[in-house]
Image 1 (tube, rainbow over the protein chains, first blue to last red):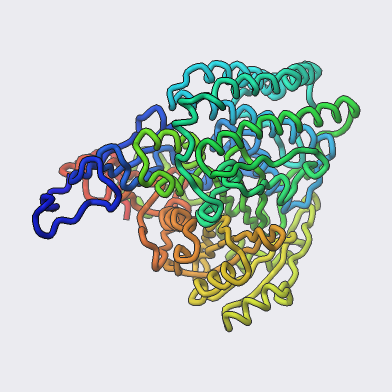
Image 2: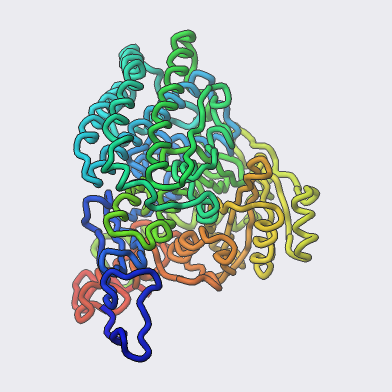
Length: 389
Length: 232
């Protein structure tokens, strides 16, 4: 509450903000989180609200800071991969992938075709599982309970596949420098075929529940508009950028692995609001499934091959630095690596998409209601493990 | 960070060794990252595959444009693994950034970070890399050698705000002209900058600054805490 402000009608009265006020004089500071179910982790946002309207928002992060970048410096290159699992813990495969790409880049290693295909397959399965988690939880945040159960049914199938492939369900550690540790198993292939065959119909089910849902549309259309120019200015990547209408995807823009040979479209939105970001993610689910089908077809046609290239026993990159990035479910995740010629990175820096996308939150929610903040946080799709590292 | 008071666990002596081996080799060799692969070659084990050598990129039209637009800004330019790094004078950084954004369409600041070369003067490298959508997804990396202060790029890209706060928090580099230079990942009042090479990996004893009447200002354990280790 601002006690210095004078009463309306008296001399020198200044309205708190220019737009119509809900409570006139009173601005209140409100702590949103760190223990709030819709912040998806330990995110604290200090809100200045005028009634129900947000005047300013100040995210306060760092509750999950574990010094991952410092840990990288103390361990050898292969030992760094498990740490990446724990950053964006709902999309471990893409994190592994970006880390391995950076090391492969500085070592100039080639991954065999079969390894590339399986990597892409894992990435896309991970993208689907991450988007499903996002869809289920952000629908719950906005009061839709049912999609959560549907989403977790399919997510469970993907996690079972990961378990069959590498033994872990969440913190996968499924990639190695130069390729992969193991080949896919027949059971994995069978499960993946079953999944890919039915998943498009499942996406239809989710869309039946939400896309034309009146409540869902009222809660999301026109909320958190963030235009292409704003996205670029704030460094926002991933579905929020595509939802704003720019068809920019690292898989196409800075191709890695075998993505140039695969057919898929980059879905884009138009209105740059929460609803369009939702639509983009739904379309990405379908595109990911399309990629998965192509990978499975290739693996069926080429049943044998190496999954790991020639990798030195001790990984000692030459002096120098390199940056490599992949398209994670959240946006561009990149690793910047400085090598001093020893078997440990001199510096390993992460470009975390959640951290940089979250930075734009105060701009997105300014002037909206507190309940819209929940919708916008959901739509940026942050994972606090990655924000804080 | 020096620890006093003999502590029961032998952490402090073990604390420092990990840092120097990592920090020392590049300090002995020229610390400039892209330059010395030649030195690495004789020392390199046969197992280590040799990456392509960095080449001088000062002839690139983009680099020439920068030196033309901002005279005296470019110190060196190298290309390594297809990635161009341009080292610029700290004083000219903002000008170069403005030029890159406005005239060369590098509208998207991908990331900003720092590297600590412990024994070098000036100690830090601040790295920025930027992306151009118009120039066929070209990327460019800028490098600034600086001490504990560096000009801020927030006036050019808003995205630099949190990135610079993170660098300030973890490296202790103060960005001049930044609108909100506060810690971001560690808490206000935390002592030390964790990503510096001389910060021990097992951390420092900071206690919790939640009871200001009992705990000293700026964090740290209470004065009568038997486990107290002083942090200078």
